[in-house]
Amino acid sequence: MLIAAWTDRKVEPSREDCISFLAGVEASDGVILIATPTIAELLKGTPPLELPRRKSVVPVPFDARAARILGEAMPSEVLKKLRPENNMPPLAYFKYDAMIAACAKAFLADCIVSLDEKDMPTLANHVGLPFRTPSMYRQPQQKTLL
Image (tube, rainbow, N blue to C red):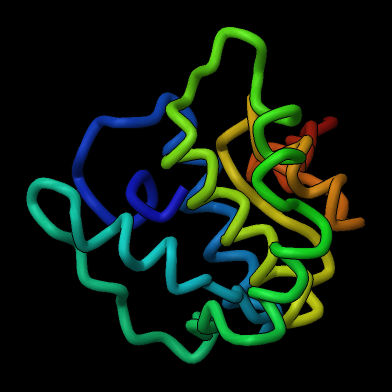
């Protein structure tokens, strides 16, 4: 979602939803928690993407609390069972997403917002958080009546 919103890369068809979602959070003085594993994903891209400095964007570490949540709620055996039957994405990528979900839970996020509608809903549910996509925050178009 961040790559789609903060770069010119044409990686997501829902780029406008991402931009709108982030603008809405900023306009309402909301906060977006960004897990450090997400930041690692941004930095390993081509070209690397630095996390913009905004008051609405708060990086949160994969710390001891997140590690405990991951270890207790999603040990390796559970992650292997939660991963789709076709074994995609590779387990290493799936573990990154599990770390992100654990960070969200550890830092008391209200929900997880992601474009990953394949794996993240399962992981969010497994840590007890609702899953949303940026498009779920889309404002209905007002109709002008004369």
